[in-house]
Length: 320
Image 1 (cartoon, one colour):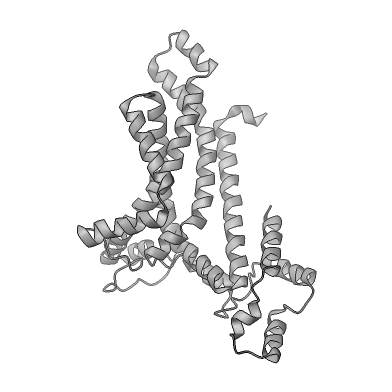
Image 2 (cartoon, one colour; image 1 turned 120 degrees about the vertical axis):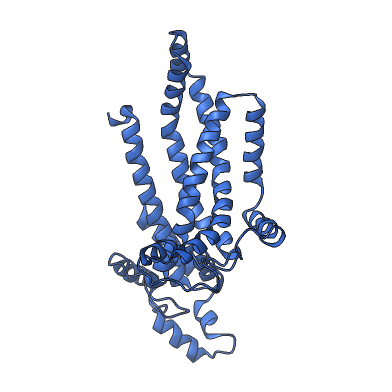
């Protein structure tokens, strides 16, 4: 799967209409300068040779050099990926739990006011663009009410970042015992995490409700009720049988959000992996784009591997 993603990304970049050497050299470059840049980047070699050289470096953990900054791509990815995980993981934990809980609760209260309200909130989270939610949240909570931190990065300008250990300002501040930095980092995390949690919760709520309704209307749940089992036991049966498909759905949302978080990072000047990848695409830094897509693919494969193992543990039927 990873090899297929790398191949498709490599070919799409190479057969595109944008000339990387022209973008790097500028509009006033002559033919000799363009040829020299192409030679330095290896773009004058046959396409298959470029691909095998790239894959050979990739299996050694070498993502190449950024064409814009000249630094190793892996060195540019590492701190930015930590910054994104600092935003993404708590948002996913909150949004995933809230969405699944509300979805299952809505299925148990089918047709009630609670059900209609949760469906409306889910539709709202689906329909409204991410950047609009981010901008409106900044306007309300920062500009109007003044309770949110300024959308200018991971800590305030008056705070000094701690000595980097993990790359996370929050964790590194706690390790250094600098609780002012920890509080400042939490203050800056609150609003983007809340927005991202809402965006994650909306599709999980909708699909969890549908999954739980299918389980509630199944024959084995009807049989459990006809046997006179208490409602608490019936609810446990429904929740247990809904968890596997909900986990699979949550894994898909997590992998998709890693790429989709770029607009939110741009709005909050977060300096994370998604914002870096978006800038690499816009600037035509193809080596960085290839590394960006490869990391997303690796992350997705890792997430789905964990999800498959969890499903195997939750569903005894899959073990056979």
